[in-house]
Length: 160
Image 1 (cartoon, rainbow, N blue to C red):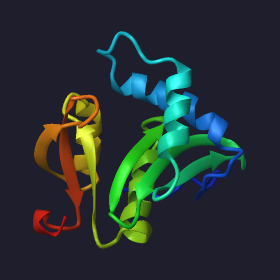
Image 2 (cartoon, rainbow, N blue to C red):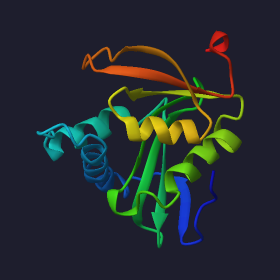
Image 3 (cartoon, helix red, strand yellow):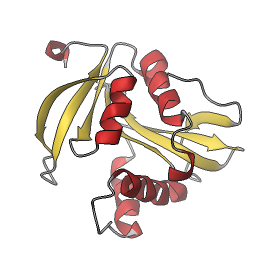
């Protein structure tokens, strides 16, 4: 895994960051799902940010020059479950995602954590495997019905 580049700062999201999250999420999601021909409009993503990025979860951002969000993650620290991790398409492949995963492993959830990944998102599955996560259980998302796989880091299945 990699350390944060010196030009970037990891911090909790502020209200001023929120307008940047929906477009970043939409663009990164579309990049990760090229087979999907129609991506929901920006209003859909903004509504999800409003609904899903608050307590009990914390939203952490990687910002450049103090204000431009380049990546974010939404983590339920109490449950040890990562709900979202996305990197802006223009800076993917530069170690930002790995740096976020490292923060989860070392600082936020050193006891272990989980996340779900769409089974069709092969790129993300390879990324998380490189970061040391193990794929365990395949199921279906309760709202969308999309097939997904539960990935675990640092704790056996019996402890989830």
